[in-house]
Length: 132
Image 1 (tube, helix red, strand yellow):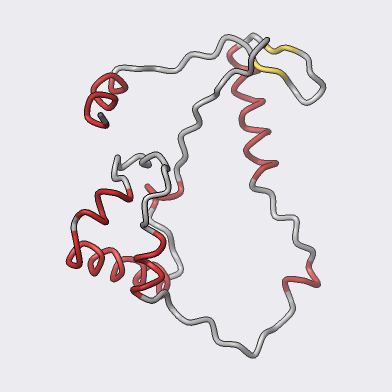
Image 2: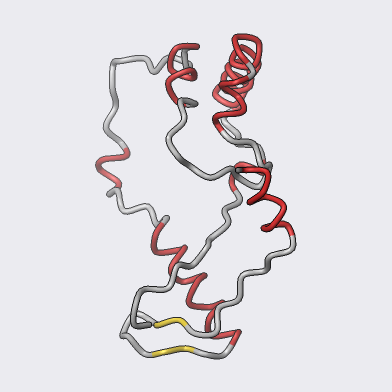
């Protein structure tokens, strides 16, 4: 099933002819639509924690991710694959060796405190609401 969907999606380019702004006004120009998506994403990922909360220190040392935590995180949750087209189900299906490799990768990210560039990219698929 996944391979059939992937074949169909390879040449698919989502097109959005209209989107609403914060006030409900319909935007139809490509530049307006792009700007609204940018605005939406910036708002969604905005850091709303106040400075006082950020400065709270904890005596608890935060440990690197364990293998069991990684194993739990890749349990199939019905999520789509990212830009790399790797599904959690694929990692899980690779068995202990695949989980060990992914765990090593997670530990490396933890130690270096830097996400791989491909992991910070997102693909938004707008789903129109009925009546829009």
